[in-house]
Length: 52
Image 1 (cartoon, one colour):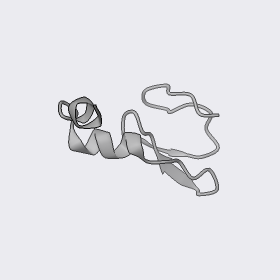
Image 2: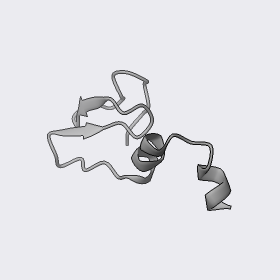
Image 3: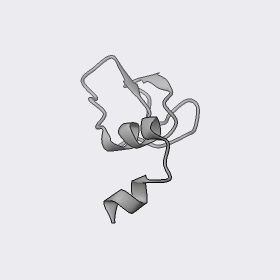
Image 4: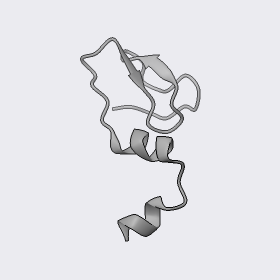
């Protein structure tokens, strides 16, 4: 099932989705859109994905 699920997804997007955000770091990368943001943000400044 995992092979089928990931077969139609861009490899970079799949790698972001599999990662975790380290909230102790100064910056992180949004797993949804790839935007870089300050970890003090509650939402991604580009796509609006909510954190926490």
